[in-house]
Length: 622
Image (tube, rainbow, N blue to C red; front, side):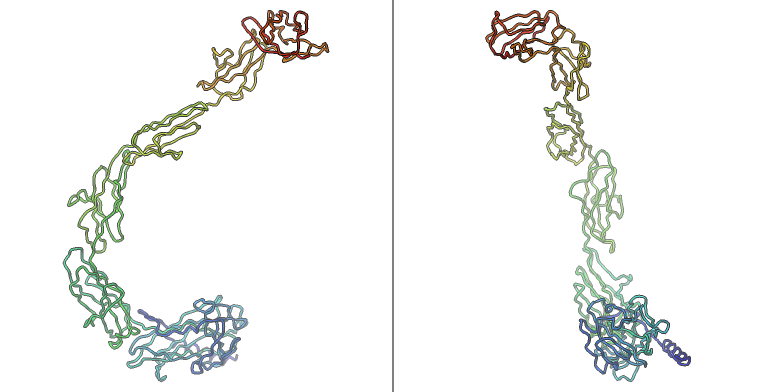
């Protein structure tokens, strides 16, 4: 590119930009009268009519001076792989590779416009060249001029040109707009899009979502208090209202008005003869009524929905103030706790608290809560915050001060097989035990902590606590003879008592048993649940003997009896006949009776020592 051409291009672009008048409606845009989104689908095309573009249609791979209509933006490897403006994967767009010479690449007539009406044209444009473009510093930016001509294509109504745009770091659709006003008697126009740049490396773009919308003022309907809402309170006499259509913009030069009314805020009807910026309503009473005004630049357009703007809706209604809603039960203070009285309010209501059903003293303002210091009945008056209307009757709220029930707490220690009754000792209450029971008392035999929350009729509650411990029975681990003392050893240490005669008990676990052939060791807990016993013999009495002269167990001999001089042994047969009395127990019994051997059988014995007697039987085997 030579220096002369570069200078020419710069002057051309700068002068074109200087004339640009792009912009959007400064007021309120209506619904779209014309749209072009180029359809959707995965098949490219169809080609545009020759009257719309002079560019050459190709199915794909657009080159300079060519275009396609496709949902696939990536026509060349250097183009973005991105969807259309709406993000629809199958949405199509007009993809253009600019010609080497500037010129019109898209034009179309727009019909069905309203005469003498402001409009807004808009379109979305993207530079399709990706950040992987091969142009480098030689990239040619995209630049489109938008022109609006009258339907005869002889009068330019408006035009504007976008600033040159190089490729972006990410795909970026940008919306461009242009405003114009149709002439009297004109109901159409011609849109033209002109490529201001030149062909070469760059200047590749896509167009999507072309729209034409009527443009008008943003209008509010206000009463004399500059509010968009009026009301009368329940049972008040009717009134009429002076309404004013106030525009916050200056799109219309000489606006025309038509006032409308509605009973539901959706379906509106024209009010005959109401065609000025101000309207005085008839006397309205209890029926909710809505008003709005439609505005157009020319009165001839007021009956065409595509040529008018509608104001915001003004509402008039009778205000019927709803009551405050307290909870169904009285509010209760238990043991002097502070309690907030609370009521539910519908949106838009305020609550005022009084000490009387009528007149009385105002005690709390504009709050759904009140914290009293004494029991009694309080009254809530509701007001509509917007209108100030007051409900004729007040709602009573009852406040009671009660004491928590007095409950019984106790600890119990029980034997393993015993049961205990836990009773909070509160009649006529509601009971919630941590076991899940709901009875006034429960019977338990398992160790643990038990609680019962007891509620009185007012709903105040206290918690009764019970600790139940189960006695652990003693377990004798061993009986040890140390010298002449017997020591009772336990596997379960605790608070136990010991005895060897069952009558005298001590906390000591050792006993002198010098004069005892045998003792019964006894242990009990201090609650007397159960006595655990274990026999202890200081001698060993065999269970059998075999007098066959083989040197083994030939005599019935009591081992250890030598430590108890004076002990004697009596032997009996099964019928209780005394067979023999032996005083010298160290020799034992040979199983003889009157020098005759007795047959194999069981024989009974009595062993005497001082005041002690041990009985049993021994088996004689031959």
